Length: 121
Image (cartoon, rainbow, N blue to C red; front, side):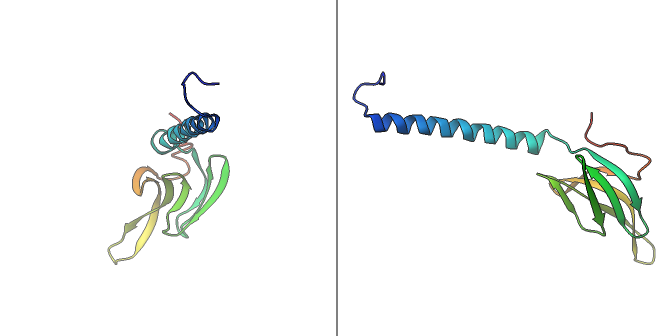
């Protein structure tokens, strides 16, 4: 039974279930904190075509294609996109690949020859 006097069997089961649920929620919170604040994705540039704004990437071991000026979600708070530089005539051209965290540029990959992997320190 229990060390606490005057506690019914049902209350004892509910207390055990609540403590188990609290432990599980704590583990989930720790995992979320790790993935959002400590973890970094591994990104390898396989091929890039700046003229057409198309790039083949290897993100955490999985192939990924990015196109145009959209941001592509990698995982959790991380994303990747092309960075554009304006010309004098008002047009824009892509000249880099940007790594985003929470919508802000965290790092810039200029081309496939410059960066082999991102996130390994």
